[in-house]
Length: 144
Ligand SMILES: [Zn+2]
Image (cartoon, rainbow, N blue to C red; front, top):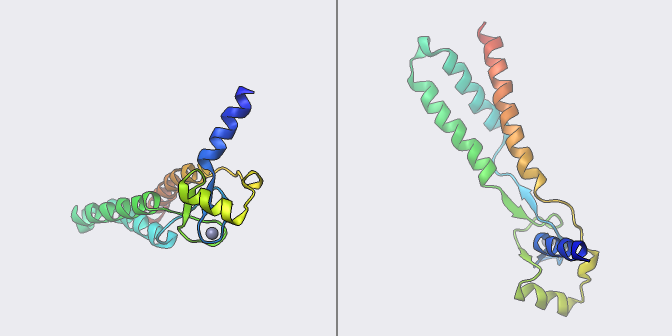
């Protein structure tokens, strides 16, 4: 009984209603920016880092700030969107506005999609680590 109650509380926290298309479920993370730009910046940083003797200390510092800034912008600046209509109009199902919509549209909240919305956030950091690793290997391979 306690377990069922706890699970239903967790589901209610994660569950959101889209005010535009009335979809109920977890939000989807939408990453801003471009993976190619991110990879290029990191690659440029590593190349300039290994070429300090040729071009000086300034290029790697500037490129490092740009790379970190862009990666953080992509990881932290992610928008939560509705997986159905891609609008940023998801509101918690326990909010007053959501309750009004659910009641007026006769939506069945129990049939909602409970897919985990936390997993992609962790994957983003894993991916960032992999990008740095790949760029390091690439830079070493290019410059030796
Ligand atoms: Zn929607």
